[in-house]
Figure 1 (cartoon, rainbow, N blue to C red):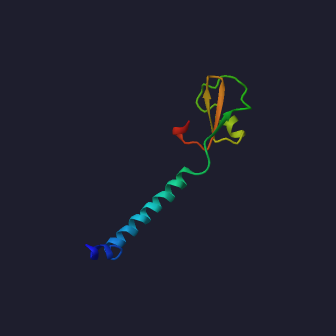
Figure 2 (cartoon, rainbow, N blue to C red):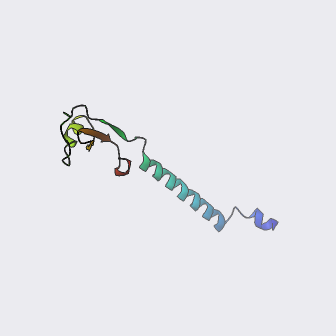
Figure 3 (spheres, rainbow, N blue to C red):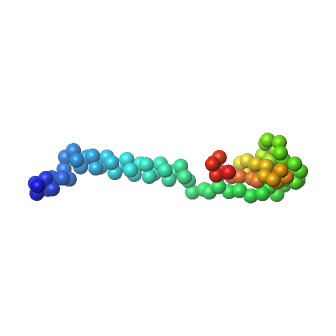
Length: 90
């Protein structure tokens, strides 16, 4: 038993541990890149004229003028603008 414990850090077993650690570090780096440091930014449009925005895509133009990526009609007469958002967070 003592001989086994002495050699535990050598050979194939050690290589397997190193490989597992490298895989875990790689997954951690990839997941932190996907999440990013930017959060979902949303705000009401300041340039929308409060007319009906029920037609699909109506809010995109005023929101893009305000440096947002997209706009979505909320409450039939208000445009909510979004930046750095995925579909799930809207």
